[in-house]
Length: 300
Image (cartoon, rainbow, N blue to C red; front, side):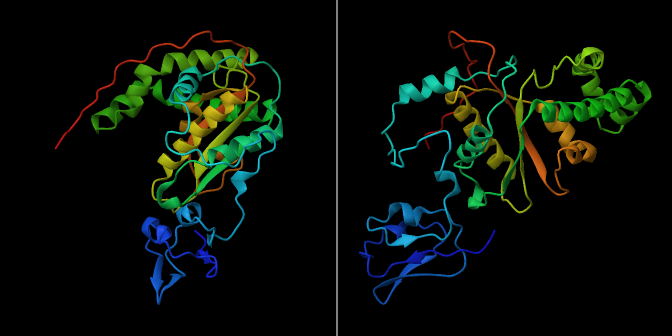
């Protein structure tokens, strides 16, 4: 991460100490009655800027995620308790994975706004090392789909050999045997349909997609990327778009350099999520249930 440091307007500073108390890196302190900042160690979280009542502390650089093309945010802070929990839960329960889309393209400004919404997510040590590869057309999505299909043709050909999967299982590597048991038949059927008439059982006709990855150096890149993906899913729903996470594409991108190269991913960049996007060609009328999870409570 590029080195940054808070900028302090000494005349505006009221000496309240709110920024010092919140700084997670101990960058800010009072010396000789004046607020000072170390020039190293800042993670750029912006807590100091956000909490200062006088606007005396700022961070360098522009806020890329503050300017949207298709959304008009007010710029106001929503404090804890300042938004309806009922409306939030309604949104969470209303978003569903979409597997039927119209052929309508998703406009470029909407796709960029989705990335802006995604990067408002938290990230470990504020590394923000995520990457977004945006496939802006149905043709680009189909191109990735073909690369993924080719990967699974090779996997299925290997899994179809009993001596290979059984031999690997004997040395403790059961991945291929488990794949053959759980996924081989459905993948073979999907590949047959794709080869016959390009029936799309992977992206389901989506007209855009976003591959969310990470550059090296983040403290928890997978968690960061998945939090960004959830932001994107919810924002897309409010914008009238359908979404679906495509796990098969993630596996292909992770395990085959040729698939990653097909969409221009450089070496060293990890992939954590693939989001299919498009105008939904289905209307869901009611929320559905979720299974009760295992929940533990500890009081001491």
